[in-house]
Length: 173
Image (cartoon, rainbow, N blue to C red; front, top):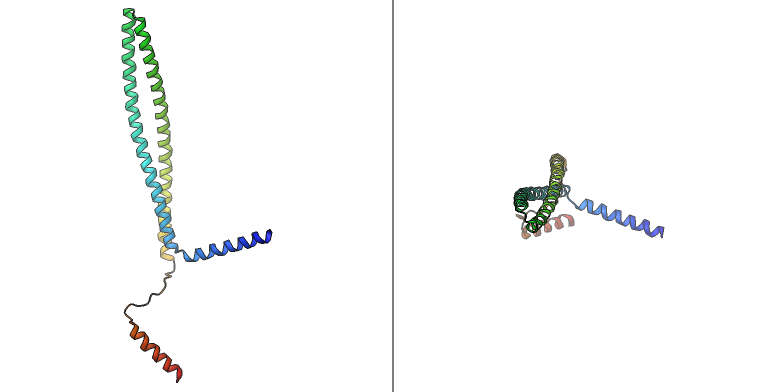
C-alpha cells in the first residue's frame, strides 16, 4: 500500500511539474489579478446594496416613529373619552408597531456592522490588488521572453522544396 501511495505522489508531482511548465506565468498573473478585481467588484456591489437597504430601513424606522406617536395621541384621546375597548385595539396596534420597530432597528444595526466590516475588507483587498499589480508588472518585465518561433508565412512551399533539394544535393556530394 505504501508503494502505491508513493507512486501516486510521484505521478501527481510529475503532472504538476508538466502543468507548471505549460502555464505561462504572465497569463496566470493576469488571471489572478482579474479574479481579485472581480471579488472587489462583487464586494462593492454588496456594499451598495447594504447602503440602499440601510437607507430603506431608516425611512421605515421614521415611519414607525410617526405611527407610534400617532397611536399615543389616539390613546390619549381614547382614555380621556373613556373608550377602553377602542384603547385596547390601539394598544394592540402599538405593541405590533413597537415590535416591528425593534426588529427594524436590530436589522439596521446588523446592516451597519456588515457595512463597516465590508468596507475594511475592501480597503485590504484594494491594497492587495495594487501590490499584486505592481509585483506582476515588475515580474513581467523580468520574465524571459519564451515564445515558440512560428514559421514565417512569407516562406512558401516552393521555397521550402528548393531549399530541401539543395540541402539534399549538398549532402550527397
